[in-house]
Image (cartoon, rainbow, N blue to C red; front, side):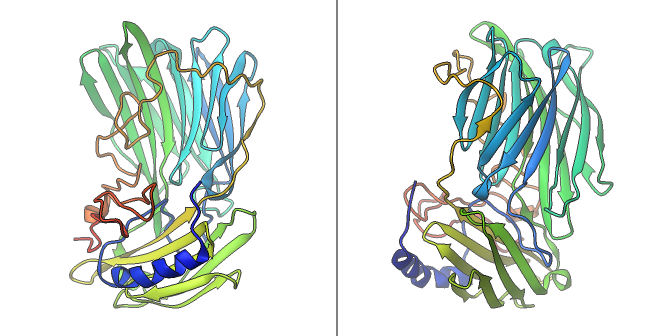
Length: 392
């Protein structure tokens, strides 16, 4: 785990304030600010996946920083946890014909089931979570079906939020690999995030396989009319020790950020130009950025969190046997949505995953914190790049 001293943070402040004022900033896990306090991660989610003709329910609780705190599967009989880590929990069944995995990365979360045939993942499924930390869970129901040609289909998508935007089903075929995907966009008027449902079938080393994934993106700021963004805002999150942190700030018509305060009051604050940077410790930072269109008619806010917590391994309600890694050569290293890899890697531009926020004009492809420091995808070694900060 990377650590940066407070003295180092002060040096970073000095070297980056000009960048905040005039250039694009890279983003870590993105959680957009709002006039209302928005929780930094989902406290709990419940996903039900059809597996071998019966529902399997997976309850996930998050830890500070978005890591996994606990995973409960129901029914648990016949399942063993083969991987138990803060960012990944994997279960395998007794005969190795199915795997279930929960992953957390960059403020997003994904639940995935893998089996042998499309028939193994057919049936109704659902997802429930409190998207905005307002004690108002949203529920999504869907059905995994088969097309007349034998490929996967996703039907009967129903969302409890009447304002949610449900995409048409997209289909992708490549050789004997077939995939169907639906993306649902949610908004609370300031923040937005996406839920992707993907079903795929294909073969690997001569063996057939079927995969069903339900993945939630991190939250990003929504581009809005300038008059809807100007004013007081609050970011609220949970620090690594479980205590509540808060940043209050004001967005002005020229995209400048002023009146920045934070609690705990030991936080270090630097602001300048179109952003502010708050350090609660040497491994807990929040970076606020205001982006605007060239003509000044629209703005969006990103309050990007970079927390590195020493999270304990999550708890599970099954036996644990990490000698069985669950790979068995079947390509379990296929990507998270937004990473390379089939079938779980989704680079089809449906947006919302891995900070590839293609839904918001030129805002997409935010950089992320590099493993060697405050890097970005363009190798410049500073605050991100290529995130289209002008929102053209």
